[in-house]
Amino acid sequence: MKRIKFKTIHKTKMADTITPVGLYLRFRDTYANTLLLESSDYHSKEESFSFIAIDPVISVKAENDHLSFSHKGVELENQKIGRNFNAIFDRYSQTIDLDCSEELKPFNGFYGYTTYDAVQYFENISLNVEQAPSAIPLMQYSFYRFIIAINHFNDEMTLIENIEEGTASRIKEVQSIIDAQAFNTQKFEIVGEESSNVTGEEFKEYVRKAKSHCKRGDVFQLVLSRQFQQKFKGDEFNVYRALRSINPSPYLFYFDYGSFKLMGSSPEAQIKISTEKAIINPIAGTFRRTGNMADDILLGKKLSADKKETAEHVMLVDLARNDLSK
Image (spheres, rainbow, N blue to C red):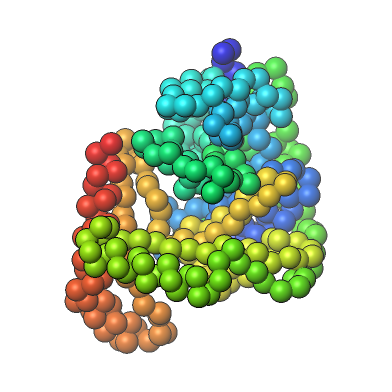
């Protein structure tokens, strides 16, 4: 496949009057498929960043056991994955010929998501598609024309543009949207009653079975979940805004793909790669913060001394070690 050349330029400005949410609201109506990755852990550490990815140029998508490659919304190639995911994805990623400074490389690259069910592409696991159908692509990553990186520690914003060979820069167009003060907000309201794919009694029975498997030694841990559905009218972004208020975290995200949206809040990163090192830092055991430092320290000590929590953490560290060895 022919390589596509890009040259990266950037502008930097103060961001002490800018919020990631306000900035995202400025762009989403003008640019479809805009992504927000936000850290609400402001000023806690130097690597506390939020990102907004705007205008996807190249996209790689895994769906129905096929991996597709698209350029500016036009699909150029579609291959059956089978057991060749890594080889196909690596070849697609190599199509980008990027002229980018070293300081911007940590912010540049593919932005997107990987679902749990995508494990079938990395491990020898076969899933029953009929029992667990996927309504969205199992993986989707895009290389974006514009990336806004907000450094919360320094109150500094970097606007990055990846200019494809043969096209002119549009960084001034994006800059004007950043400088605009107005943005649109819409209402949100639920419609009807909440529903689930599993009843409360059925879920309790699953829990009893899971505990039985753990006691017999069949497994170390089982994570059970239920799906909930709620009809609504209005803007889903208000749900994300409520989530970040109720559950602020270093890793918040809101991905708008048009026909579906993804959002979430996590206290930990799945994996971090820096200076050619991969790091997994699993978290096990939590307690509700009291607002009183002395009480929080006491609760933290109790948590560290809890045999169950300690055993779980040792297990997670062991699993992380196994994952890194692969």
